[in-house]
Image 1 (cartoon, rainbow, N blue to C red):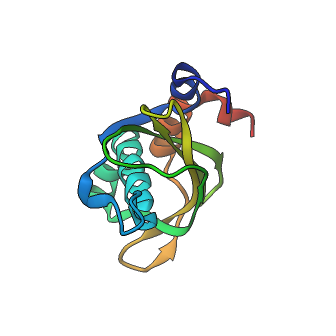
Image 2 (cartoon, helix red, strand yellow):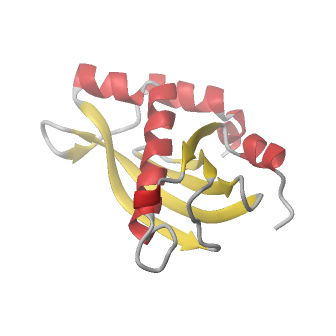
Image 3 (spheres, rainbow, N blue to C red):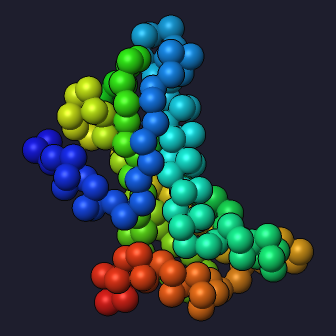
Length: 150
């Protein structure tokens, strides 16, 4: 991959930086596969905080449920390293959104891992899918105006 960190940061409107922890490695001397889903989760929560999904969830008891997630491992991560995890919305539906994630290794200077998730908005009282609110939709579109053309 020839992507630079600057390009990576442009492609992902929400990013977080994390140190790779020694305890995240497994017996094969690389970061255990389940840890990547925690990295994605941390980036997803940063995205939700930036778009006020979390505050709306607490206020009206409507919020996100992870319906599907996947991960593609391209290169192993090892300790010590610092990673930048990016998150963006690829498509915005009426009741759901598809997010993409990527992990940039500062040591390797490349994307080591990528993933996707489908997130559905649910009323926590009725357990039924609901439409993404106008305020959340507006916050996402402000962060990623290119989604308005979908």
